[in-house]
Image 1 (cartoon, rainbow, N blue to C red):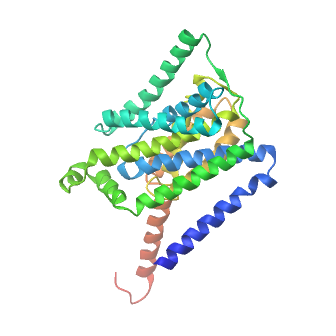
Image 2: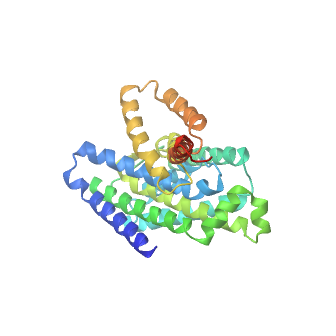
Image 3: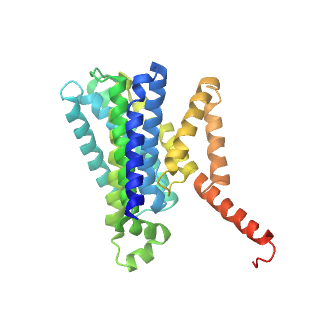
Length: 317
């Protein structure tokens, strides 16, 4: 068991190290593509960290992503860049703690509606503040951060997110989350502090998402609420996590990479029909692959193996 674990860790380190060298050989467009892909891989993995085991479908991804981006925009001229990231993470953690404490008692469609409304509420509040208090609608970001620096930061954050997800899955809190996802009443009777466990994972997940927005903010140079709080971010993250399998460690990765490339191609070739295609794809994934690609492949493998056993002469069912 320890040898297998050591092999997994070594393989993970080798993959991360190899990815760290990619910017040296990539073209400017390729680097931009990898930054976007890494961003969504991290978002989908962070989303699945909480929503995967608990089955709470959150559409608040863009709320925290936008908080991170706008925090960098507001304080970029008065703080050093490392401090900007720390402040962004602290604000994301604070907002997630307040929101989680007030709303994680909701479930089902009520939680989905609230999280979607939260993102829109924050966008409207930021817009109102900018227009009425500062007299403008957007802010410029001039930071000495190169595309390579953004890529390496996102790669480090993605690696940390995977490590957290892996650690949670093997811990008692991971088991508690699975019980909560199956039945919260049973979880409470088992002695699990349901509210505390959900709040802790929601806060960690939201803080990571906030950092993704903060790290990517310098890419835009100019940020306004419509850009930072674009609801498409929430829906893309959700689709990617669901496609790969939100309750599997590598599920979000398997969903994020191909879908990001597909969305890039669609937005470039079908800009007027992009939203329609996105909606149809989302419906198709929910109906055809509700548990993700990994679960679908596993189920079909087991079905094929049972069929093979049945067709072997002399083997009883």
